[in-house]
Length: 244
Ligand SMILES: *Cc1c(COP(=O)(O)O)cnc(C)c1O
Image (spheres, rainbow, N blue to C red):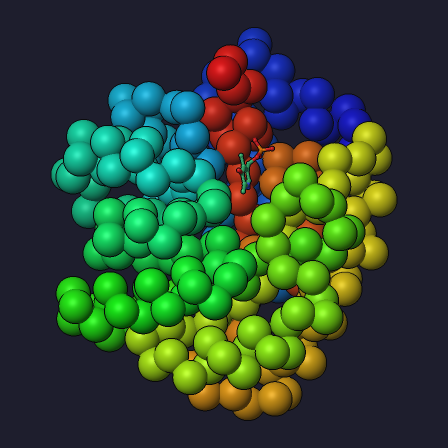
């Protein structure tokens, strides 16, 4: 595992080599969980990466791009309007006053973590005649104060409230596990998120479809896929180490 990781990030590799290896590893992890590579959406996390490199990645077949800052998302998208079929994801924290800049630009928001934000999305979607905004609820499973996300005991109430907002579709759960030296240490949290997703799905709440799990990054995407992730968010392993 550690060896693979070093290899995939090795700057001596060309992008095409790294991307081919990444695709292979995603497909292998998918088959270990009785799925195919087509079942896994790889979001190329393009924060700090130039529009030119995003265009190269798109031309090589990557179609999903993730940004964590609204301003950077807007600037890059405006440079890249000519990428038909590209899908954008907001994966970072979202302030309610920035909702207006994001709606209509992204297909998924991965960081829904409070009711005031959900209401802001509902109101703005109404104004803009956006029928449904797909959102993941961000979960903070390890109780890290430095991180956004709901604690598990906040989730039932939150779900009851957001299920009353018809312009939102709650498509799944998202999490960012604590930084660990061995990615195996995150497996239990990934498993827990999958169990929570399954339980919520059984509740059959309106506007809550819960078909997806957004979990897994460069260091741990194989383990996340093995535990059921179908949206993985991969930056370093696609674009190389970020310098800023
Ligand atoms: C940066 C980022 C990622 C990607 O991280 P890598 O370790 O570079 O793959 C994934 N998710 C979120 C929310 C991020 O901010």
